[in-house]
Length: 491
Image (cartoon, rainbow, N blue to C red; front, side, top):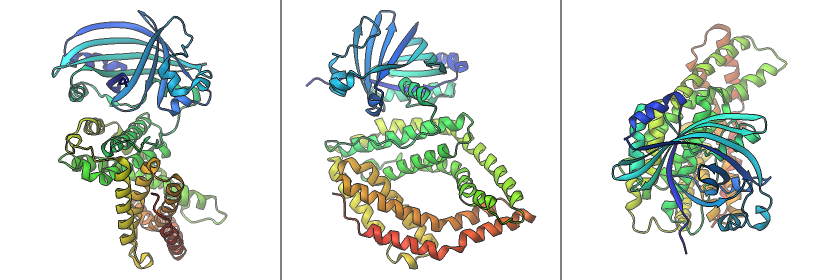
């Protein structure tokens, strides 16, 4: 069986004004520049995109080439053939194998990409690398968006050289690691810019090793962090982007804990600590969004006037503005850029990958053991749930969240119906326990605002409302706990 051709590359977003600084920081090499124009294709129901693939015909100086790319992360499969026109060659075997004849016949042009590409072939740490800088635009109907990207493609040598060169270039210019392909950006333009990047299934398969499963899960979370960080840097106060960034951080930290027996090492604690910093930079913005949406705005729409409510609203909105400024600052910081690059290097080339001869065994076996351990730990911490303190119940909620993230990631390796039932019940438990934690969160949030006068009175009134139905929330949590305990293991 032939091995599919792969490209190994890093992609970064760049400001056009920084291109010369990037070139100046790169080693000398053979330079060139060309204009490229490409048309991208997919089916009406976006079958290729759902498969993590992109298909284009690009006009190059040597002629037109049809290219199919598939996969995410550092390495992607790439299949190319020469074509005579902008009509797809549907007989291309990799395309036919991926889509099938019927689906391939439904492919249609969706958008175009035009770029001026500057390229340099260079040698760095005994590796041959192509540095490319693409500046241009994507066009779909009457809409267009600009792009400016820096790519490092490994032609020969070790992938560690890519990350080493990337770190040097990042010292010269603010480059932001990106996992969005030109196809991804084209789809966003065609269908309307998404407000946030949600969690993608990692695409696990039973034949995978445990190490490969961790890489797939971690790549998905890292891409989610990078995409939502971009939305924050663009200046939009998007509650969903803040939420999804924090979710991605928690998923990645949880995966690091679940796979600790494989990935433990000197780098792990440092990376987890930096992820905790990033989530913390967004915590206040998220807590204010939740309080405004679930508590303040319903009260403001109520029939009974609350003295000082308008003053409280002004204080909350002002605090929210400051919190979003902090979140945007974190997503634009040198620390954020370094964290993403360090994480990517660790996921793809870390020493942990060489520590076990069998790559941790089969992913399915690892998943069963890991989920069993998660369930036992949750059962132990949740014993006597109604009698636990608020702090102890919060720890139960954290364990439920970790179990849910693990079950969602491992779902393709489990009995599907049973896995879905487990996820549903543990999510309901997590939600019920979260409602119990609302009082403590609301009190801490309002205290941090240092309110006075009417605003302080209104804050006390709303905090009292949040705390008033504690017994009802306790009973709901107990019911959710009982329902969860009845769920069988999904293997």
